[in-house]
Length: 182
Image 1 (cartoon, rainbow, N blue to C red):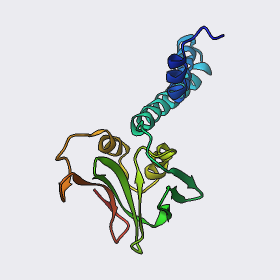
Image 2 (cartoon, rainbow, N blue to C red; image 1 turned 30 degrees about the vertical axis):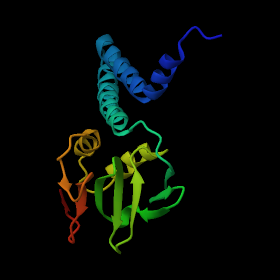
Image 3 (spheres, rainbow, N blue to C red; image 1 turned 90 degrees about the vertical axis):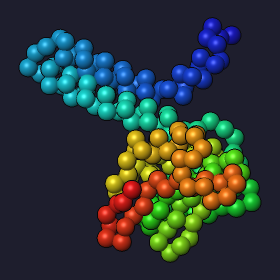
Image 4 (cartoon, rainbow, N blue to C red; image 1 turned 180 degrees about the vertical axis):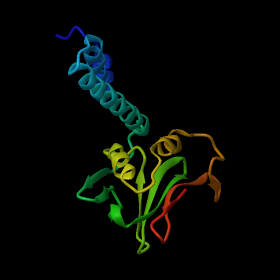
């Protein structure tokens, strides 16, 4: 028998990384408060580390979209793979040249395109899609705040409308010279 409601346990589990980061920052602040030649620099380091980690953890949480889209996303050894019920595929992270967020028939999907033209579509709500945040953040010039903003925006008309109930939003693109253009 549990004395804590299940929805509270689920919420704490979802926010666990941000809670741990906050605990590290608080521990750093406590060490700074204690003072001393050793504790102040160590506490300052922990405070900065915890605060930076917390910003990243909150961005990861905002990137993760609840839902039950079909398929599973796997990010392993520089490769993003999507295993869907009818389609799937994989792309290499170093070979990515374009990332777009599409809205097709009411469902939002990532379109990841390689230099050779191969592209895959991954639903934003697919199982494991939260792993894409770290893979995308590793791309040169990726603005993680803009990435989270793209996922969080649900206003119609923020991208280019192609047809009825279809929207395209470019999130990241690599230029020919290796310089990222947004």
